[in-house]
Length: 237
Image 1: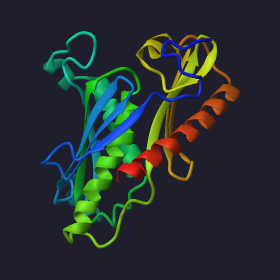
Image 2: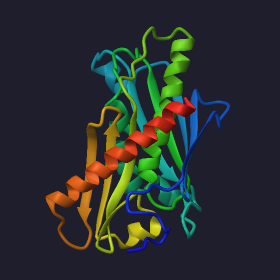
Image 3: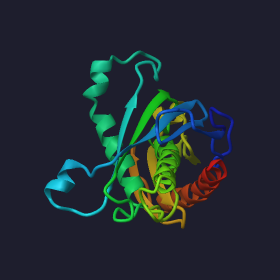
């Protein structure tokens, strides 16, 4: 079976990470995965979130916000509908969970880091690109805290990256683009740590149930892809 992009079943799209693309943010990264482009910025608040202060909790916090720009897709989406988009809220929570899983909140000190992921152009896999690029922005913001004497040790325990995969025309494939995602029989997203452990697995049988063996195969493909993405993160950092 030939994929629309002519890629092999286990082949990712071309990925690039460009840092320091925003002069104001403490960390920033523009990630491109094929036709998908996401601008990720990390902003530091020198205080804990209000809920932590109220509950007298120790340590800092990492959170995320995700949105698509009005013309990220084939048709324009109004800004009002973007602000009320339940999908964006769900993806924001996913990104936050993924990044917090590799951060020692006590070592982060009483700081809040917000990762904003704005999709400039969407061609499938935007949530995975946001996690992979968002980690780079987060790592840069943490380095800013260290360089400016705000914290004394690195709170990031390991890298994290994410990749999509699924069943398309009866074949298990990696890194779905828009054409594949729209017609996939099974759609999955994998968040993977630097040590090959899975942080989150989202998988749905879009047209029919899938098997345990199929899911395990996709997990192996995702783990291999995550290693490549993490190596790229390390290169740009």
